[in-house]
Figure 1: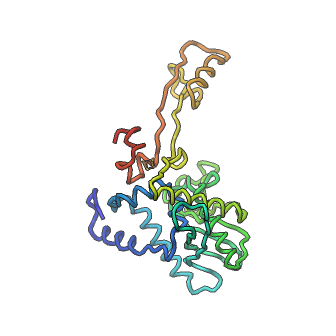
Figure 2: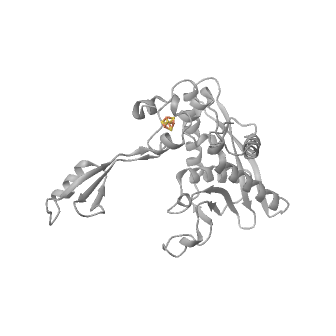
Figure 3: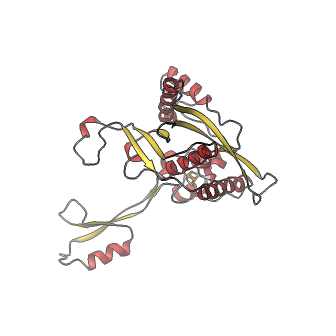
Amino acid sequence: MENRLGLPEWLVEAVDKTRGEYDSGKSDYSITSLLQPAMVQELKRIHNPPEDVTDQLQAFIGTSCHNQIEWALKGNPRYIVEERLYHTFHIPEAPGDKKEFIVSSQLDLYDKQEKTLWDHKFSKLFSFTGGGKKEHEQQLAYQCYLLKKAGYEVDSVQISGFGLDWAKTQVGLKADYPKSLFCRTPYPQWVDEDVEEFIKSRILDMEYAKLGQIRVCTKEERWARPDQFKVKRKGRKTALRVLYSRQEAEEYIANLPKPDGKEYIEVVEGEDIRCVHFCNVREHCNFYKEKYGG
Ligand code: SF4
């Protein structure tokens, strides 16, 4: 493991060992790997890029807290804690000879009494507020599917979110600011057919990528932030309006009831947040090299 910021050796060792504990069991895919873009997964498989301890710290905190919750609740028969479940998908249209794929997922916690499935996440608050994240919903949908296949009833699926940037001093300043570092985000349950279709399409994406047919990550997968066209007025600090195309911005100015001729458009270029800040295979990615010249 690399250490570009020169963090203490004890921390590097602890992070490295904790990371080495991860085991996706006897499966072809874990749901976590299926939720990654196929291009990222495939470029990682081919180039095996080095990890840096700095980029692993958030995951380290997450794993440590998972272990602690498991330690505390494992003996309580009310809960199923940290159990890996499996399901096999038969996909005749898969390219290549392989047609059976085992997909696993490790359940963080199932409360038998409340019939609630929980998945713990350790991240910034915005991951848990404002409706949550699509990847969280997809992960819970598959875990719920597995639980039901194993004979359990599920009334509710929730993310148990630990907001790493939560600050007590912010409570009460904004109406929707959580009162606690712990946030619960409920998600809808999916019907089985939707789960199966989703998992199969992700597997096909991955299998085609392994054969060299790699599709470029979508805007959504790149966490693309679009260009912004801010309509501003000289002498005023804030924008009159923020729009997402030059045409819309020009039309907005043309239709202003009281234009004073001091309006102008300021363009703020968008960015592919995952590519630029989080993807550790970008140096092997043609999309990135063409767009950002890396
Ligand atoms: S740099 Fe962007 S487009 Fe390329 S693999 Fe990474 S996330 Fe995907």
